[in-house]
Length: 257
Image 1 (tube, rainbow, N blue to C red):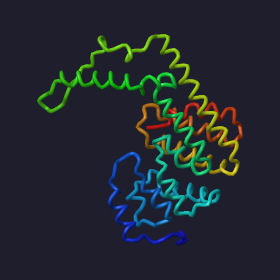
Image 2 (tube, rainbow, N blue to C red):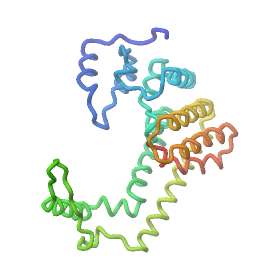
Image 3 (cartoon, one colour):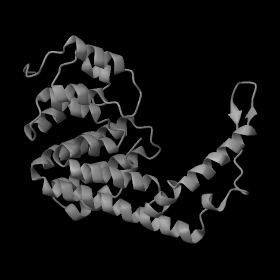
Image 4 (cartoon, one colour):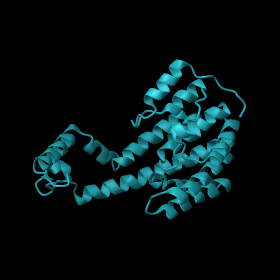
């Protein structure tokens, strides 16, 4: 690799080593290194790159050709994009080319996590949070501690307040909105692929390597199904069948281990 990077200062080493074992979800040492174009010795091991060296190099070279990133910076992007978490594809790859869209998709995924906009408004309301907290606090007061140290709690689902319950009609609305949001995210991802023609070859390679890692290393119960879904997205993108690609990406929400 051409030495097109900056040397790390003592302060840089201090920042990285201080936070290297930080398990906080929002901490990403790769972003610090990438922004400053710094070379961290043994970075693959220290940052735990989930792609093997060959795949990392292939993806990084392809990414550096379509972006302003140096090869090292591109490697950090790939390192940060763990194959087992679907949101990394958005926050690390799509964000490079369309930050606004990446932010919107992440927001859409959060709403999907909460079961659609109607249910999201309900579960994020102060009243719901308070009722849920009281429910668990009550269960913890009645917890059973076993001799081996394990704990058993029983949640009272019969006497819980109405705000924690959903009627069959409400559940139908939630299910409908979940389907709509999956379709929305699928279309957003397909539109991104169609719009950014310069990224298509890289994205095809990324999806194929993602699929390869999924079939070999995933603990997902349906790992074969997910791997085939990701590979189909790569094939449809290669064929420039963006209508089929949107349908492929409707399943994007399930592409995590």
